[in-house]
Image (cartoon, rainbow, N blue to C red; front, side, top):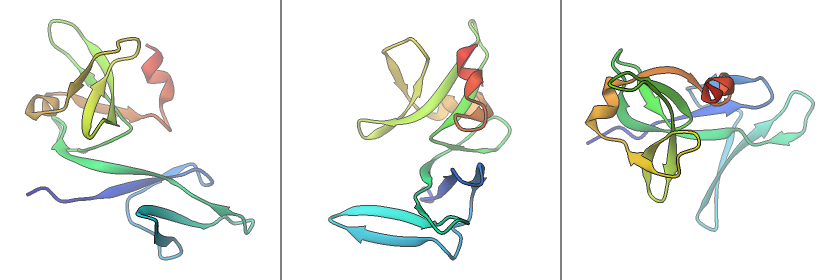
Length: 123
């Protein structure tokens, strides 16, 4: 069984958070999980929550939704990992077709994420 894990993109501090800070509040309301906290200026904000896919890349790094991966084969491709219609998929910019992630995804390498390295998707 895979471990259910999450990471957060803190939009205020502009950094990835792998451990849920104590100052964040988790609230289940109408079946929706709300994670948020107080910004340094006192405003409420909600970080972006990303789930671990259960798969590691070729260097052993955990693959999360929002990661950007590079695949080298007959053709080199840069793909984003997204949650779509109940499963994690590899999305290539400009291609409406998505490939469901599987054990072959671990042959790719994480080269960034959509928050810190969005320009990688424009290659």
